[in-house]
Image 1 (cartoon, helix red, strand yellow):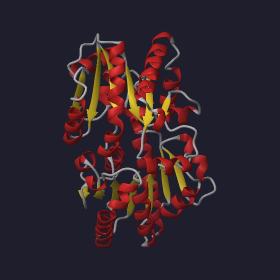
Image 2: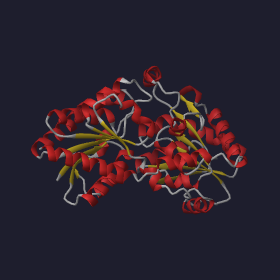
Image 3: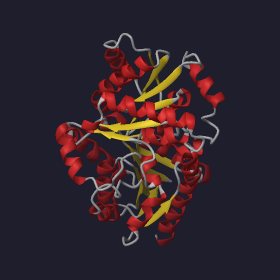
Image 4: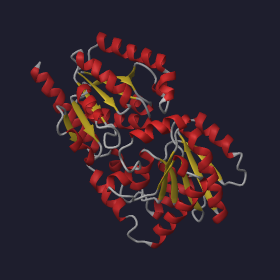
Length: 385
């Protein structure tokens, strides 16, 4: 049973791999063809193109790389025409996947989308576009479901796989000390995780300001150590080069995801995105930031509908963690707000209470729920055929 699937970035690769693993457990005959990263490849994905063809950010870059994207789209359409899948699942990566889903749906291939676009933050018209592209939508967050009540699309809240992966005790002092030792950091030092993003374009925009904030934090606490996780060697090389301009900074880099840095740290400076959710699940004080190129920022500023960008704040419906965006994200402001959060966390026993409650609301065995929804949907189509 051939299933098409596509993820265009690291977070989608993780979601796609979990879904594939659970689908194959319940449907051993399943085979997967499409695009994904190392995790999906390890689950047996037959790649049509490498995932790094989608490595871009903002509004200008996709336009510049449009010929490349068109070539990949044509390759996928040709593949699915030659070997027609029983279904196609687009995992996040919304603009490209929704376009592909719409074309495949017109060709008679059932389409599903895993991860709702940020309809709560952007124009509501996207809801109609999604329902024209996909028949089934798998949502990670409960607040997303009401946006689709009036649309002809089946919507299932599955919870978030990260909430399942991360044990409620994963951020304990014992776990923190072990993670710090694995990074060569003395457990008595104050450790700050620095998460400027997983894409080079994001890192270039965020890193300098983050490191300047780190210098200010180190001036306050000379025993501070700053850890920057890097998803690949290219980004690590860039981080080291930029870090060399700050010779007094105690900087640690490693190649891998953010989990180890967030487990080891006392607090974090985090680019808006999944990293904010992971920091919340590990009960870490944080300051959240984001920067775009000026043109992209002006476009986004006019389109944004939500009062928040950080996932903990959106989930809580209030300003649970500080957000400093674009021109507000000065090194001085970032350092000052994180210092305040660290102080509050040390003095207030209830500081992490809401973090824990939100964790439990998302801890639902997302891979299993997503796979069950997909299998029921496929079986429904097979019965109709």
